[in-house]
Image (cartoon, rainbow, N blue to C red; front, side, top):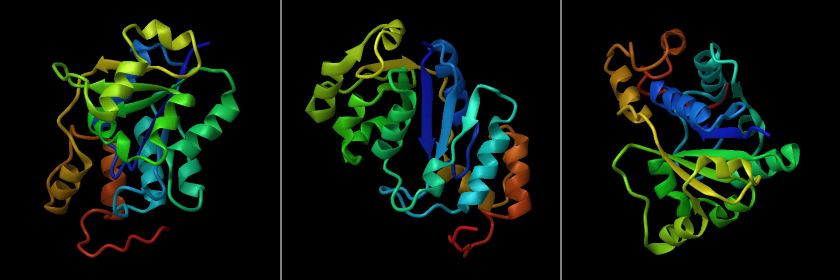
Length: 219
């Protein structure tokens, strides 16, 4: 069975760095598809700037040309904080013994010990860490011990079991961050080549990052 990928985040806004990472993981690991799951209420971050409805529109627009990318709204419609463990438990129940790969960037992976019930994630899925070349996985502390216990060296091992492995793979990481993009948009800078044109059009239409005192209430 081809594994499926799970790629979460606030996507406030989604940009080419997200899309390129997801595409390289999908192709290198022969994933059947990647679920993009925008976060509803992040337990670790302040409220999103763009509304939930706008972020869903941006993600849908960004992935429209890639049939193997799928928008999943479950965290947006769920009440309360968006805990990844809850989302993965639902997906595991849905896919039973199918291999599932949680895709994390380097920064997110290094923050993993801050996540709710983070050590239980490996009981539900594989964890795929997408990192820039030259970076080394931690080898000490709780996260270092976690890597040493579960890491595999070959992508093929991710299809032999449905969960329980950590795989670290280099990807072409663009030096982009949503925070920097929002700052640039507030200054009126042109986001061309940093995000899909369809996403830039939604941002322009909604004016979601240029109003200084924008309400964070959902639409």
